[in-house]
Amino acid sequence: MADDKILYSKEDGIATITFNRPEKMNAITNDMLIDIRRIIGETIRDDEVRAVIVTGNGRAFCGGTDVSALSRSEADSAAASQRRAEAASLPESVLPPWTFSRIPKPTIAAVNGAAVGMAAEWTAECDIRIASENARFGWVFSQRGLCPDIGTGPYLLPYIIGLSRALEMMYSGEIIDAREAERIGLVSKVVPPEELIPAAREMANKLIRGAPLALKAIKELTYGSLEWPPTVHRTETGKRFRSTNASEDCKEGIRSFLEKRPPVWKGK
Image 1 (cartoon, rainbow, N blue to C red):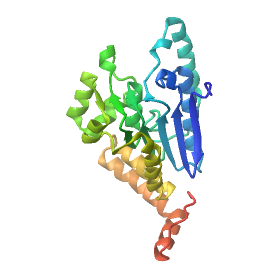
Image 2: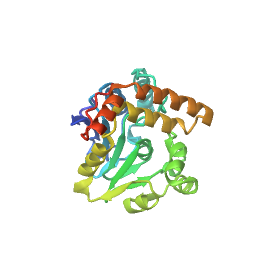
Image 3: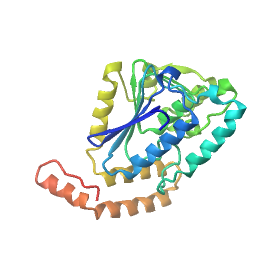
């Protein structure tokens, strides 16, 4: 990886992706983007991974793109790096092709500090956001003369916090603190800094109580509902219901209920 600027670990079915460039507010370079994409491919293919936590080291979650690296000579290298990243194939999916929303498992952004620009977009791509008291969120693109680069803010943020509030944040480039993010529904919970990762792991363990194939189907249908008309959604729901109903895990879910014991999922 890019000098360990992206860390990856697994424990008890929970993977953690950590931005690890604290001296630069975890600002993202093109090499780091390549590593992130490779790691995402690993989380998708690894059946032992049941949920994914995304966080940062130091005082920032992520400061967005490292604009200091975008000189003209480096821009050519950046384009080449992006092509290499795009060449890293991922399994086909109905999920949106954005960075973290592409993972067909529960994802949690454990936001330890500032999440601005592209990083704010990434928090919106995660299913759930938990914030440290030190967290900050800002779609600051308008203040740089840009629209959001990935597009997940304009697409997903209105569903998370409502259309008017989303537009206010993106128009103004306002940076809000963790308590305001909680008030408007951008984050589920605000905790002291030392409790952030334990709270994220507690949430992950809560989410993975369900069967893996069921969680994948739920995520696909939920994201699909943003685009599919009701007739298509009904058809897609039927496909996934029949598939999960025929799974070994469905049989185990019924047996465990009747036997009054926790289920043991196999992801089959």
